[in-house]
Image (cartoon, rainbow, N blue to C red; front, side, top):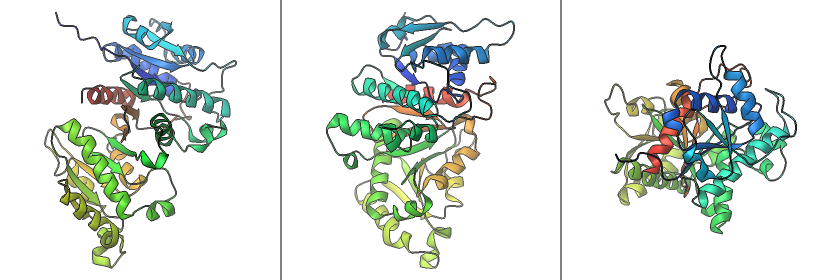
Length: 352
C-alpha cells in the first residue's frame, strides 16, 4: 500500500494565548485528526493544556498532549494527540481575553520560530493562529515594529535572503470556496492606503497575484481589478486614480501576458468573480485597492471558511480569516472551521 504520510511536518503557531487560537487548535486536532496528522504546534505546552480543558465536554475523552523535541517527531505522533514543541515558555498563565505584552511576545515568538523553520526547510508550511495586534505592539522589540503577521514574515524573509524589506514585496490574499481577493495595501490607515494606489504598487500586485495563482491553478488566472473610487471613477468625474495609475498598470500587465481586466466598479466586481454551486465566476481573483474593500466581501460570505494567504514569500503561510475573539475566549465555543480551511489550503499549496 502506498503511504500517504506527509514527508515533512507542518507547523501551526500558537496565536495569542489570551484568545481563541489555542482552543481552535485543540478542537482541530480532536475533531479532524486525519487532516492534522503530521502537524504540530509551536508554542507553550501549559497554554495548550489549558485550552484542552476549555473544550473538553463531560463524558468525553480528553485530548492528550505530546511534547516533542524536534519537528520531524510530529510525523510519528499517533492520531488524536496534540504534538507541541515548546518554543516560548510562560511562567504564569496569561489572563484570558486581556491584552498583554507577555501574550504578544509568546505569539510573536511562535511565528518567528515557525518562519525560521520554514526557511530552513524543516517544515513544509506554516499555519498561523490569530494574534492580537495591540498585544504584539505591547511586546516591545522586535514585535512592536510590525502591524501583524504579514509584515513580521516579510522582514524575517528579507533578513534571511540578505535583502532590504522593500525588495521582498508581499501581498495578502483572502480566499474561500467562492471568492479570492488580493490587496494592493494591507495594514495602514485609509488615507495612507489611497496614497498607496500607484502605478508601481498596482502593477506589482498584479504580477505577484498572477505568479501565485498561475502556479496553483496550472494556468493564467483571470484577474479583475477593482477601481478605487465609486463607479471606478466614472471617467474622471469621481476621481482620477483609475486614469492616472490603475488603468496604465493594467495595460502594462497585459503587455506582459497577464490576463487582467478592469478597472471595474468596486460595488459589483466581487459579485462577478464569485463562484456559485460549482460554477466558476467570471474571474478567478479580484485585486482590491485597500484592506476593507477586499476583505469585507470575502468575510461576508463566511468567516468560518475564509483563509488568509501571504503571497510573494518563499514559504507557504496561511491563516484563519478571523481574530482572537476575546469575547468568547475560554468558553470552548470557538469554531475551528477557518483554521481547518487554512490547513487544507496549506496542504494544497505544498503540492505546487
